[in-house]
Length: 318
Ligand code: BTN
Image (cartoon, rainbow, N blue to C red; front, side, top):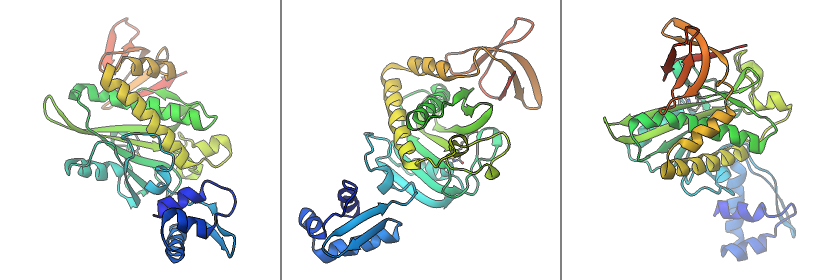
């Protein structure tokens, strides 16, 4: 009922009559008032004026299902949303939900993570209410070896969603870093539960530095707000990401990864660049020349030899 009341209030910048609300929703005036009081407790700023009705002045800046699902155009992703004020990591929560049988498309959001993590054991700084920290449960009919390419799909979807909702144009550093200039603005992480030849489920995690002040981030990172000098609406960015991701995901399930890999190449700053690859303490340099069929990076080293890597840290050398 609260969601339906909000839907009516969001249709106008003016007051919406209480009488009209009670008629349209077929509930009493006092039931309308009770729901309005509860919405206020959730952070919705609603003014009530006798004989005029209710005016929605502002909505809370949080990633609850009520906010995300408003105008959400997806069919699967985000139809089931679980929201926390604080968790250790949305990856852990989503993984457990996956084990417990949560449906495909379930998305876990947190306002804050105390142990947000990235690739290669790194931490992901997750200050309260500033970034987007989410993990999605997927149950794709694909082999475990294909799952590495889901990280590339995710990076493409985050990149396109940022481009659709802001004037920032990030590029992708293999495999999953989104950069603005040389600074990281978002990252993606894919974890898997599988048998030898069958995927049980995949958890795709995304972290985006949205309104994050630079004091919370390492020197190598930036945020959308720092780039744009203005606040960015997190729910709008999430809706755009979920729709973009779902569109690519359906395309991959129907036709395979070819188009997503092509799009990744267009958005990537890695291919054609000189790179330094570091893996367990050792590093080597070369030119990134392509992606293999598993989404691995192909590097040509100075001797002319061609090397493929599925993991490791890649630095662009200018
Ligand atoms: C990386 O760049 O190495 C990946 C970063 C992934 C961060 C996100 S934030 C939401 C989800 N929960 C986590 O603990 N990590 C991912």
